[in-house]
Length: 370
Image 1 (cartoon, rainbow, N blue to C red):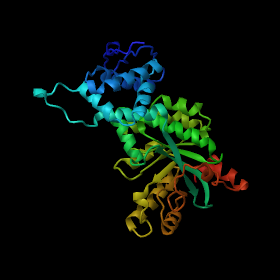
Image 2: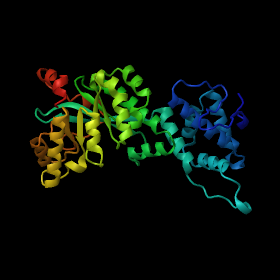
Image 3: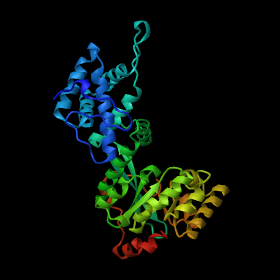
Image 4: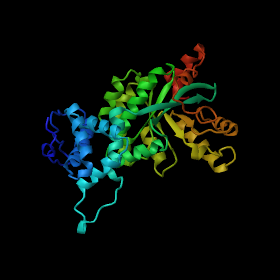
């Protein structure tokens, strides 16, 4: 198979480069990953510096071993290098104009490094899921979990950095769907009575791939909670009501995170009519001693009751905070005081409740209040 750069035609934002042997993937996300990888491969192979000849030859070998899948070839190539230094240098040399007066450019990470790291995660699925227990505050039983994404590596970066990097590389949606898939697969090992709160952006909620992903999963729709984690615009709120209506009719529940953290959040809560309102750590910290936080939490518990939703306190870290939110009418809670996120199935299996309580706590009418 030829890997000459001339075989990788230039493309606009709306065109997918034709990698030799490639066929168009039916899913837009996969096509975008393939296009990004093909563009990077083309740039690396186009540069002519002798010091990067070995890098180019090795990349050609991986392309030959993975015909039609430049994203896999690129990811395997990066893993074999052990460092991105050679790779990013080659990419940047191909992209930038000749330096004036023959001066050399300094080596720098650049956007290619970010794109290649995310492509490697997507190709090899080097991410996993941690679950944090969510307690019913009236019974002290675990009734649900919130899924958190963790990345396999040296642990030097927070998950938020990975998602920010993916967004900058125009791969945010792809990484978010990979995280959702990881959580759904991991949820198979959870006790069957627990609901699973999946963090999700408004853009991902509006993606037509979402219903297909949820409906084809082995997790029943009645156990799924879509937890909106980003601020909404008025236009997004209106679109979400329509887009999520079919899923919600089949049992999927909606949670709104960070309520009160941006100006229009209360208006959007009334528009969306979520099943769960979540108050994050910034509002719960000191709720037992801070009159303003105490009053706001009480108001949010009242708002939840008015729209038939439950109020969940996040980030509970002391017994005093737990007592305060319980007294204010919060129905569920989570936080380090109650239980930390864990990737260990043996921890998940400890989140069981007596058989005589399962039916009451998982009944849809009860769940709307808990």
